[in-house]
Length: 316
Image 1 (cartoon, one colour):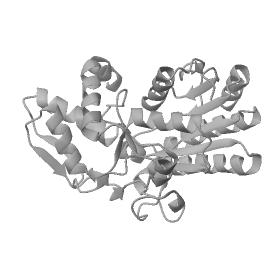
Image 2 (cartoon, rainbow, N blue to C red; image 1 turned 135 degrees about the horizontal axis):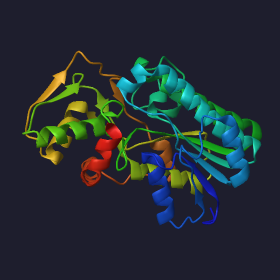
Image 3 (cartoon, rainbow, N blue to C red; image 1 turned 90 degrees about the vertical axis):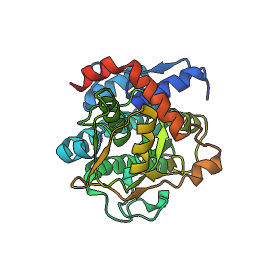
Image 4 (tube, one colour; image 1 turned 120 degrees about the vertical axis):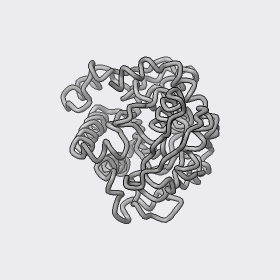
């Protein structure tokens, strides 16, 4: 891949998109383009087509999505399915119509069935029912995977889908109404710490198992897909290691220095019992994660502390 290749990163201001931009810049890629949501509404088909026609990127990386945790998915199911379909369909269809040869589509491990065998293999896709708490988002992402596969099969273009496990890191969303479990815990423990180590109430039983990948490692996997023509249409991206939500909470609590009680509200849903990714296909090709969980949480907390005033404003 030439370092002057024109690459459009959709969602470049988000946690994943900004990590991809940062990583590509560090590797010497000098022709990156992005557009904020104010500059370009990815839900608008005409706007997206006009932007791609004007900019003529050679590669598009789709890191744009409407995302959130269990609460957000439960409260806004229509927005989660419709807005994600609009965003990805506009990008994928315009890329095909306007001659973009390489497209990297980013999804989520929630595309796999709720009770699929563990660890989750790529071939388990569409073999059973989804987890009800995030099926709206999952259905949209499955559609994106299948659209890219169809283009790959029918037109022979290098359109590939990467399905990351739970991502976390710098530039994450710390709004308690819409954030995922790790950043939500981080904020709760931090605020309880500065409030005389008050008790922290967390959702569920603490027993589900989850896998977490630092966002910079995800960015490295995107660069790997960019610089290589991957032989299959779908790849899992993760660490291959998981832990209980209870252990995650205790790890975050220790790093933050909160000394109060943890209360588990078992009246709240747990979500999928376990979501461990089988990452053997990516490992066989030569990609592997680098950042251990405690190191990644520490890096994220350091960033959180440095940006806490802006985080509070965003979360109002």
